[in-house]
Amino acid sequence: MDGTAVAPAAGTVLNALATGTGSAFAIDVELRAEVTLDGRETVTGSVAGEPDADTSLIERCVELVTERFGNGEGGTVHTESDIPMASGLKSSSAAANATVLATLSALDAVGEISKADAARIGVQAARDVGVTVTGAFDDASASMLGGVTVTDNTEDALLAHDPVEWDVLVWTPPERAYSADADVDRCHQIAPMADLVADLALDGEYGRAMTVNGLAFAAALGFSTDPMVEAMPYVEGVSLSGTGPSVTAVGNREDLERVRATWEQREGQTWMTTTQRDGARTT
Image (cartoon, rainbow, N blue to C red; front, side):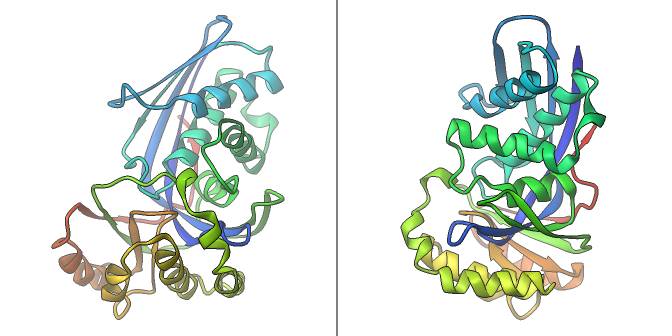
């Protein structure tokens, strides 16, 4: 029994570390998962180009799906990704989403669960293996559903879901940062700013929300605010994405190209994409 699926990356509107309320938006760069259920007792995962990668998340996703919709079948799961790992662009959420959908496809059970509930399975897997602090339902829901979402991560509740059409500029420095290693105590100290960002997001002011979030969380997590300050005169919104190190800016392409010329002088990779409205899907 075989199944394949893809899921997009996402950028941050509101980091959920401070209060449990988060917001994210899907961007058009994807991860692909291939699942084969072959009757073995265990699940073995692999990641293309990363022979030493931790595969516990994708393996747990397969286990949870087969326990619920199958008979606990084992097998293999393999992912290939265009999303930079540990860069704040929700590669873990995309991996979980794609794996869950691919496993459902292998079981011929895609129609038995909503996409939001499929995302919740991946969130549970992430909690089970300890790769997330908040549960990351904001990131998972944006990747699974497309567009922008606002969530209560303490309840895995979807508070808002809107389609958005932005061009997106991403600067990804060469270093990596893992969300499970973030200084949660320092993030809790900026909860009043996170509450403000949540109010802006729930009012549909996603760009302004991003920018306030970016300045606050960059300060809390020890990242420079310079890339955001450089972008602010030209973009609708700009933020540190997740717990970093990537920075994302949204707006129209002409204005983002002006920012791109500045960001390209920094070490790392600067690249352009768009938002993605369809979310994760089987292939």
